[in-house]
Length: 361
Image 1 (spheres, rainbow, N blue to C red):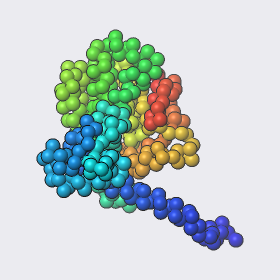
Image 2: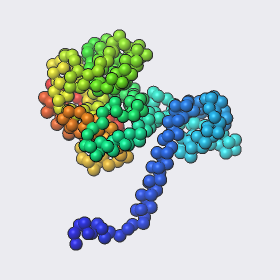
Image 3: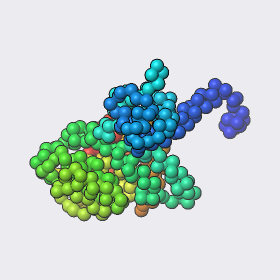
Image 4: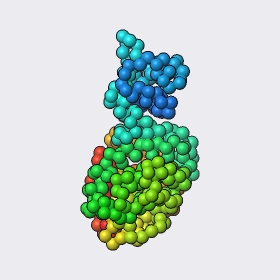
């Protein structure tokens, strides 16, 4: 009997099927609930309850100028999902301090609505990405639903606030000292400028230049720099990672974006030309093990799903189409960077969500 025949003849396992269905219904509930999270975020319902006091639906509706009946149903969804607490004795709801932190604080590294905004964009783009599967073409960043740009800025900013200046930059040999003394920095693939602005606020003696090929993202970055009061030392231009201008940079950075690029080896070669002889290239990528099977985890589930709908289509919309994917891993990234001419490469730091890599000429 062939292997195919053996697979076909395998007995149906009721317990496995039940376990699968339980997982499916949990997923269905999570996806349906995600819409209510985004509604609560946009309408201000969570922020109205940020003080962790107990509220009736009418009180929340009054604070937010919304309809009490809608709010009552929304609160029921939050309580059923563990996103709010309910007191049956008083028929009131509240956000616990822990729930309030995750749902209302945009400076919290685990701010939930930003990530769900990204997820919502992938659902909105199902037809777009399905057609890319059939046509074997890519999907450029600007062709996605607008929630992708806004959600990415909100979601990734919190992580950078927590780690970038206090953990990641000090892990690079001499980088923090150079930034304090004053150097020039190119932040390529900067998106809405969160990483660039955070660095500019922390190191007032240095000059920061953010580059991204998406005009909409650069417009958001310029607005963000002005609002943060760092426009005097933090500027943004539309440019690709293979063609950004300038030389003798003391530091070049790329955050969660190298795997999105069509020609990452070409990017590495251009970064090498743009760096000062003693300059540093800082590469922050989603955490991944080198072995595929080691990434089949809850975190890998998030990254592979995002990679299918966002990262891979973006790379495939560009020249070369290297299609690294969001789970490339350190070994593959080393191959890319050294092929571009860098001779030194090491893992400088890591978190459960990111690899922090240092490359030098």
